[in-house]
Every structure is written in C-alpha cells, then in structure tokens.
Length: 143
Image 1: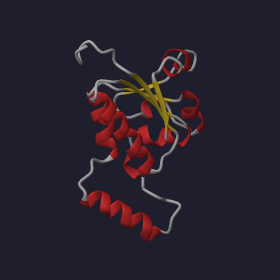
Image 2: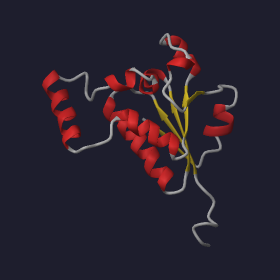
Image 3: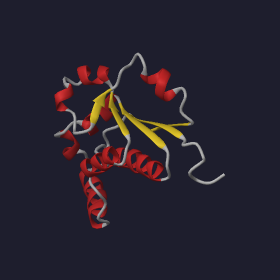
Image 4: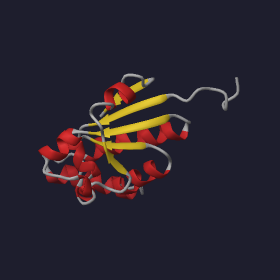
C-alpha cells in the first residue's frame, strides 16, 4: 500500500499547561504529526487556555516555578537555538491544517471571550468534542 493509500491517523492532543516548555512540546508534537500526514486536533484547556490567548501567548515562560535565573537561562538557550516562539508555532499549526480548540469552560473561568483567542483558534463544542474527536482518535496525547 502506497503512502497515499494509507489512512491518516487521527490525533487528539490536549494541552493543560501555560508553562512554555510544555506548550512548546505540545505544539511541536502536533506539528511533527501534521507533517507526517496525521489529522491533528489540539485542545487547550485549564491553564493551557493562556497559550491561545492573543496577548498572553507572548508572556509564557519556561519553568516559572523555578528560581528566576533558572527560568531565564532556559529562555535564553531557547532563543539561542532560534526556536520559533509559541505565537508563530500556533499560526503555523493553523496554516498547516491543525484544528485548534479552546475549552469554553476555561474561557469563562479565566474571564476570557472568543474575541481574546489567537487567530485560527475556535471554541470547542463540549457536546461533540469527546464523542467526535477524542474517542475516535487513533492517538490521544496530553501535555
């Protein structure tokens, strides 16, 4: 069977963190899977909702619970490695075909609206998300 005949894997990725290293790992995993031909849906819930907020995405940091010098050192190494920032990754995911969803409950909990979401992010429909995305997925990942 050729690569074109193989059915695409459906992948559900859930990101519940706003710590940049976790967000970066979730997004890079999603991008890698997209580029291998998978159908990817990435869901941001809990504190992960901050990673799809059009302003807060620019404020994410690595290891905010560690001493400031540790966090700053990791951020500096990421910059030196010329890694894409979270906003660029989110935009890339959208343009390469990922479905990007925000948890409606957490929008309310964190005092946000759909208008606060970054370009390409849609509010998930809780009545269908689990039934139509997560349960039938071939792979479910959580960050």
